[in-house]
Length: 137
Picture 1 (cartoon, rainbow, N blue to C red):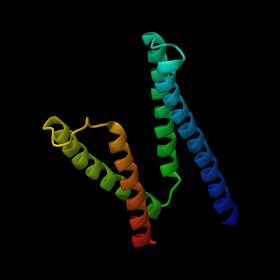
Picture 2: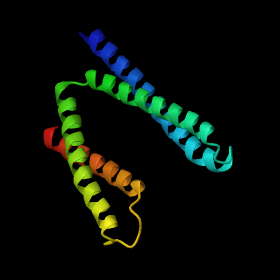
Picture 3: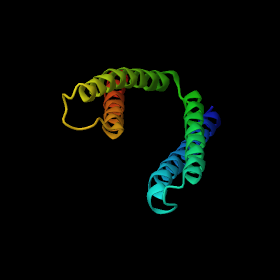
């Protein structure tokens, strides 16, 4: 029994390390697309497209690895994750559409930027994970 628990924990740690690497490479390739476009290859469209395609492929690998990690979680961990993701999706959808409408109708004096929505999404996910973990554990 103890060996099985150790094997499960080791497998989960290995997948967590893989997910960390996929996430790191995704962030680095995203930065390469954005900053490389401006400063390394002077906006050459085909080079930007190649690196953007690479970024998208790395992003898919990151999501696939996270999906695999979910299979290694117990029922409670999956419940906390899925509930947190559902709350985050709902709040991001409502807030994102509201934010876009505020931009379209000029209720805000600036253009709606995706970075603000990404920050909002991350904050919602972290807060909902903390709340759900405290509620269920």
